[in-house]
Image 1 (cartoon, one colour):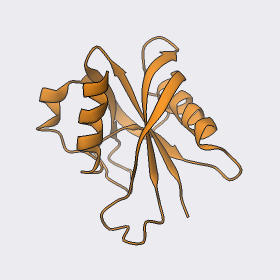
Image 2: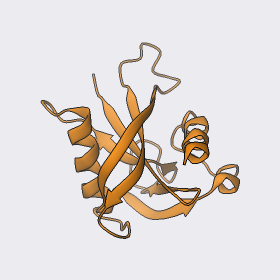
Image 3: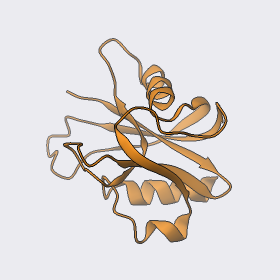
Image 4: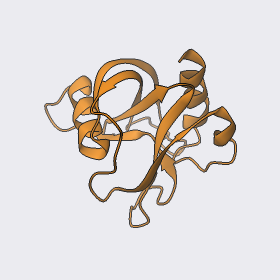
Length: 133
């Protein structure tokens, strides 16, 4: 069973999203939260911090779990997406690291309507994060 952690960095009514690169097998070219797979023997908190540092160079200092999501085609709910709001971090400005993503940006509520997200289930969770920020 794969476990996935997802970070929603929120600041000034905006959330940081990354666009998955065109060569990615899952949800290529779609907007995603920062995150990835939990490695064997790794806790969710550890995985969240590691993935954020690897993908955008930010280290979460405070975060709270907002939801556990499942893809609609994951009927047996074998691959949970543990989703966290991250209001506090260190590392300055986010920057793309590695080849998993092709761009990043900060987006507000009004931007989300037209965006194609990697998982449609993200939309309500992202709106909740923005409302709570």
